[in-house]
Length: 311
Image (cartoon, rainbow, N blue to C red; front, top):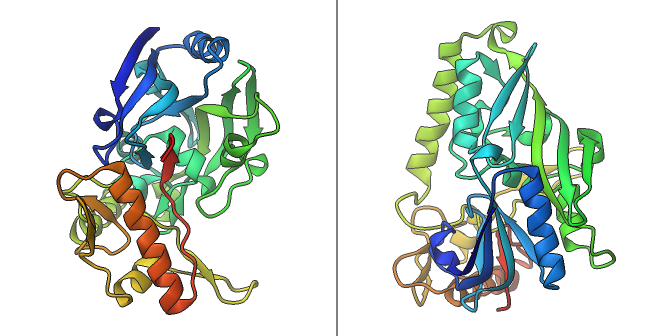
């Protein structure tokens, strides 16, 4: 376990902004995580588990706590046979998708373009192009801030659109032991041949999704993916979801800028760092967008990105 001090979080987030973390601990085992959690508790500091930092906005003032980063030990995939795989929390989704394609397994391959890790994907129930992690997840193993291990069946993870029980636990103020770190997840995938497809077919599906992403998202500029969650609409028995980008664009906000933060000209539901942006710029711009859409359409957009530290 390596303990660093005053580590700039701009080096560890996809927005490329954020002040220093008081402590930054790199872990390579479950015991390391337990020690890191104990370190935070001993110093009466909050802790945050960092994946790839692709859905995270850290305050310019930094984080007065302990950032715990999962190392290479937590970036492994094990084939359990019969379409079942176990994936550790720091595994990049791109590598996971490629692995499943190479194994001829369908169910996660369309998530290849999401620039995050498995732990973050479980936390947010990440998804794209009709697939999300909850559809094939069987169980999740986690560790809480007291160092206790938990294994939950997918049915107990409270998966919903961009939601899981792990968000509820992280937000809980009733117990110091509530927040949990996702160590691994097990998935039940389907052999492509059982779907009447070849490995080349699911490879092509993945490449098609990647092409759509490249053509419709501002991948050349620092960003944290979708800024706002999709909106629920329609009757309860036939729900639909509406993309926030439609309302943002109709409000005339494409290209709107505050400091170095801009509503993307490519995709209105992305805020990008066009150069020199601060976390305050990005947060202020997201709030401006929320207010503008609320005033014009009477709709309240909910942020998908996670804020960390004091703003």
